[in-house]
Amino acid sequence: MYAIPGIHRTGAQPSPVPEEVATAAPAPVARTVAAVLADAQIESVLQELDTDLVGLAPVKARIRDIAALLVIDRLRMNLGLAAQAPSLHMCFTGNPGTGKTTVALRMATILHRLGYVRKGHLVAVTRDDLVGQYIGHTAPKTREVLKKAMGGVLFIDEAYYLYRPENERDYGQEAIEILLQVMENQRDDLVVILAGYSDRMDTFFQSNPGMSSRIAHHLAFPDYAPPELMQIAEKMLATQNYHFGAGASEAFGRYLELRLRQPHFANARSVRNALDRARLRQASRLFADRDRELSAQDLSTLTEADFLASRLFHTTQGDA
Image (cartoon, rainbow, N blue to C red; front, top):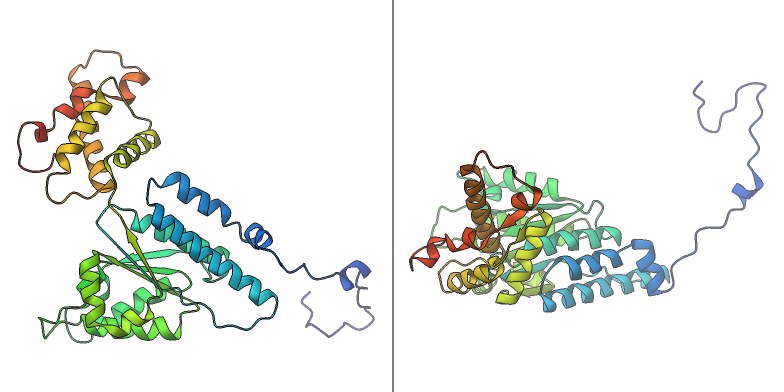
């Protein structure tokens, strides 16, 4: 039977409160960096950054700096040292395929475990998700995205496309104004990460100083060097139970040398696309021999020929 708190039924006596419950001491407050790290369990996230992501040394160092800032801020709060919560809005700049979205996901986890966002999820959007096509359409679209992102991280890729001054009838400025208001007034419940090419983001900030002033952390993502691209390829293959066969690694290295000279190279994204095409050639090669009994080794090996069949070895045009 439901009983209203504080009211006892006639003839009934309240249950005695166990002494150990009544006198239980509050949980000890963390006073060391090690205690905060253990409580928040973010050391594993930082370790994953090092092991899962190839290269990106300056980015990893900056993420650790931000994590250190948040840990020290937590210790200050534990000791009653009043301070304004640090601004955490960020800008990630770099070419496509340099790990910006992956790092944003890790950052969302760190922020959540340290208590700076409630949920720790990431909502990734572009201009099309925020800006409408007619009057009155942009505000509800932007607010709906912000509603989904609250308690987590909003990642806006190619954010400079929000601002199109050459088009007087463009509604991107309306989305920017709503974002600015929320970034300022609800920064304790939402972290915004803007991402895109470095030069275009610089122009965007020059044209929108209000947005620039709200970004506290700028992280530049460098392009991967050829050896790092090879490591990325090996990691991608391993996660899908594939590997390079005899001579295949060397053939892929030569492919990378040629592809890096071509336009629109997208770092890890281009590596993934190249491996997908090699898998397609492998599948066609195995499919053609219909009566052959295939082993696990056959099904998981990419051969030298699977890479040398790329048209990049036979033409100077296009991506293969």
